[in-house]
Image (cartoon, rainbow, N blue to C red; front, side, top):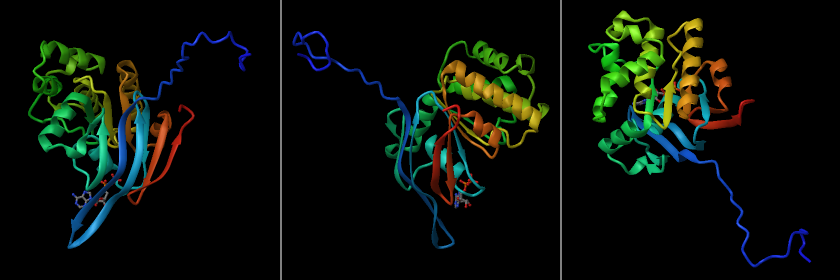
Length: 249
Ligand code: ADP
């Protein structure tokens, strides 16, 4: 008799399908050091974590703990001193700066605390930049559509200096989503915004993220924002000190 009490085997093998959580970002033994005033400064010390595709994640920690450096390495803006960053199956550690720029252009969206819009371009033109870099078609119509999504269809011809902080961050979100990124990195996205504006921008980040199925990794001091993600990674003195799921995880 068959132990599980099932029908006798016909000889066909049983296939058990295990679907692992797909990993978009894999950080392995990552370290970053700088030479400063003749001595070596370790800013990141042997960091390890993996980020699941489509998940939302926060990186928190005191000022100077290495969060921005870590995000820059994850996004391919900078190079590690040792260890590796694998983004969408591509090991960034082996790439030249140009190749990393290509990977960013293909797969990554980034928003910053100080927005980093180009001051001499209008809102619409700022959103068009990544599309132009990718030689996409119908660039203007698509950029207008993105501005519409962030509620700024009527601000396309305004320059960054003519927009409020919240509006500038919404333009930078439209720009970040313009290449349909697989992963969005956000570095203190609400750091320069008042509480009410922060709340609106955070809602927009999560709404756009959900709609597009993008993975989110956000560095923040804002514990309310961190609590909205599925997982909180804590960094202190360049070391990962905890990595826990939130109630959403
Ligand atoms: P956080 O984002 O947590 O505030 P950062 O990643 O910005 O921390 O910085 C971590 C540490 O690395 C700080 O002590 C900072 O001074 C140092 N650091 C960052 N960039 C450089 C650099 N280019 N050269 C030397 N030290 C740096």
